[in-house]
Length: 208
Image (cartoon, rainbow, N blue to C red; front, side, top):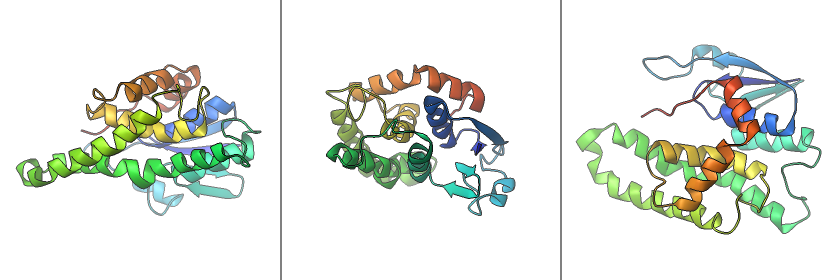
C-alpha cells in the first residue's frame, strides 16, 4: 500500500486528491508545521533528507517531487486513467503541464509571497513580479477558455498537478482578472474526491 508522508498546508494535499480520484488505497503519515516558523518538522528528514513534502513510499520505492509522484502513481496504479495515451500529441501537452506547475508557474507566486514580507524593502520588485504573475496566470486562463479542464472535458493528472497554482493564486487574491482560472478552481474543488482528500488530509491554508 502507498504511504503518503503528508505535511499540513502543503503540496502533498494534491497527492491525496489524486489517490482519491483513482480509488487507490493509501495510508497517511502526518507531519505538522511549526506554528511559529511554519517550517516542516525535522522528522520529515528521516524519509526525505530535504525535509520537504510530498513524499510517497510504495514498497521499496520512495519518491519526492509532486510531478514525479503524479506521473508514477498514474503509470503504476492508474490503469490508463487520468492521462492521455502516451502515443498521442495530447500526452505531450499533458507532460508539459506536469512540468509547468513547478518549473515556471510557481516562481512568481513564491516571490510575491516572500517579497511581500519585506515591506518597503521589496517595493522595487513588485512591478516585475506583477508582470510575471499576469504572464503566467493569463497563459493558464487562456488555456482554460474553451474547455472545463486543461486537456478537455475530463479531469487529468495535469489538472491535479496544476491545482496548487490556482489555489495559491486564489489565496493571494490574484484570480479576479482571470475568470476561466477562477471557475476551474471552483470546479475541481467541488469534486467529491477532492473534498474527501481534504477531509482526510485536513483543511489547508496558505501562508500569508
